[in-house]
Every structure is written in structure tokens, then in C-alpha cells.
Length: 142
Image (cartoon, rainbow, N blue to C red; front, side):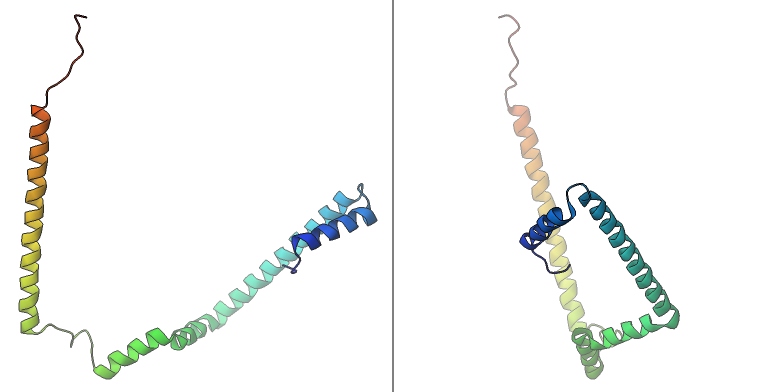
């Protein structure tokens, strides 16, 4: 806050203890705390008033527009799309791309079916092994 380190704050505290005295020190700290609280409340109120004034005058929209224009990533991407003429309408797949997409979809579907079949087979083997395992029960005769 003020750029004081712990050592410097300890020196200030010791000097305050010597000058003010142990009886009045809590009163001074309480008064300083109240003053600090009031100053923070006034700062929050001022900041809130400035934000409300900015909202009412439309400064926020201008600020957001400037931030968007100053962002090189979004600005660059928009300009590249504009220069190449790529839009949602022109980004349609060519017939070759559609065929490749369908082929990939079929391959992924087959792989998913095979994965599910292997999973069901493992579960069936585990259930069969569990049934075949000898059940141990405590002897009630001994």
C-alpha cells in the first residue's frame, strides 16, 4: 500500500508505542482504523459514482469498441476473413470433402461399435470368472 516492509512497520510500531504509550495506543489504532474505513468507503462511493456516470454517458460502449479495435488477434482474424472472402456461406464443403467426411464418420462409428463389443466381452468374462470362483464361507462346525 505505502511501500513499507514488515521491518519498517515494526519500527514505526515501536516508535508509536514509545511516543504514544501503551494506554493510548489502542485508541490511536482504533481511530486510525475508523479513518481508514471512512476513506475506503468514500473511495468506493466515488468509484461507483464515476462508473454510473460512464454508463449513463455511453463511455463504456466507446471503451469496449476501442478495446476490440486494439486487440490485434481479433482484428487480424477479421481482416483475414474479409480479405479471403471466407464467410459462413462460402465455407460449405466440396463434394470431395463431403465424401471424406462420410468415410471418416463410418470409420468412427465402426470403431465405436468395436469398442463397445470389447467392453461387453470383458464384462461378460469378468462375470463368468466371478461365478466360477469358489465361494469361501466360514465353517460353522468348528
